[in-house]
Amino acid sequence: MKCELFDGESLRALLNDEIAERKEEGCNVESVSKEFTRLGHDASNQDLEVLYRKLESLSPRPDFPYVEPSDLARIQDQRVEGPAKAELNLSDDQLYDKIYGAWLGRCAGCMLGKPTEGWTKQKIQHYLELANSYPLTNYVPEVIPHPSGFEIQEDAYETALLGRIRCAGRDDDLDYMAINLQVLEAFGFSFTTDNIAETWLTRMPYKMTYTAERAAYRNLVNNVKPTASATYRNPYREWIGAQIRADLWGYAAPGNPKFAATLAHRDASLSHVKNGIYGEMLVAAMISAAFTTNDVEEIVHAGLSQIPATSRLAETVRDMMKWKKECSMWTEAWGKIVTKYGSYSWIHTLNNAALVLLGLLYAGLDFEKGITISVMAGLDTDCNGATCGSILGATLGGSSLPRKWTDPLNDRIKTAVFGFLECRISELAKRTFSVAKTLMDV
Image (tube, rainbow, N blue to C red; front, side, top):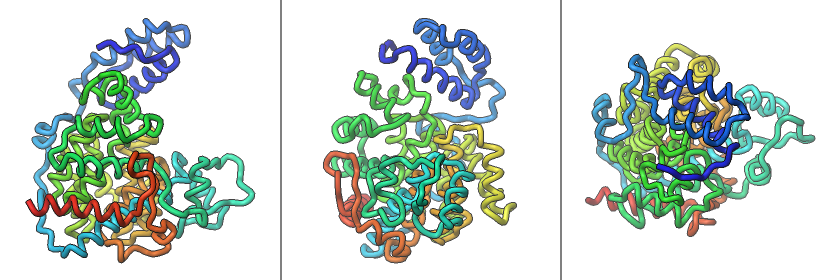
């Protein structure tokens, strides 16, 4: 495949990230890494292309202890059998309330984490202590005068600080909710990965995509077809992007974790492989299970049962459940996460999934505790707050969520998705409910 899309600097950056990704996938990258370092900035585009092709030819070492397929059949072969489907004993009003609660929970968690995206736990704690707001019990406040070294992105500063929130402001964590609702409304539950690609290209502006999604979008525009779009010059293919796209599949398949995970796989395969795919399947299955049980460990087990037991993500989930039993405080478990998973990018699936589980497992059914722990733990805070809030919102229902978290949203959401630029959250929940009912009535 030949697709000349990169100048020297962008190719050099991609190559650097690809070396890290291949190493994490279990490949021996030592010779390529040494040659890349030796060439430095004197490397020509031709030199970089040769090194990139060498990386693309690598396979995991024979002693790599994980088996991590990307195709659905092999993923399902590597699972530990778990709950595939549960009876949904909910009235229509109760089901709608849970779907609305999940939407609200995702929006609230996203706005909570938006000002501190990419910050470390230590930086968040320092900022909140300056604001006399540690530990968090509400949205992130503004510190006046603003301390240097604590830059908050402009959109978050204007729309996501305590007292400034007027709606769920535009964020990629919310854009894909709208995208995936559109997919189900347009194509039904038999949608394909190609349908996902078509919807991205017609509904989502390119510059509102990031990392793996931007790489996949770029590939699609340049006629790289799904699912090659997930791998061609895409070193972000195991990062968090797919995991944040999971929620709508769980909402639309309540009580049916296996099917929710199957829908998630079709979506994730456009831009991700291996643990990137598993992250979306894990979250979709957990959300689906949250409609039928109040037991957080059951919810986590439902997610775990839909991903390969032989994968790094499954090990991450098992680690979190073990550390919850060993550590009385979430901060102790956080330390174990950093020790084992601290080498990954702050936007990777594994470490961020661990922080979502940290919030869930240490919160029980306390919505506020769940989203605030997931955010105070750092890294991709808007994503993790949103995912934790979504799962707890589905469990508890909208009518049970604390109003101090939901009232500031004013039942409004903004996205970058054509046809969904500004909507009522309740209206999107009603549309999601209608889609879910079509599956349940089959």
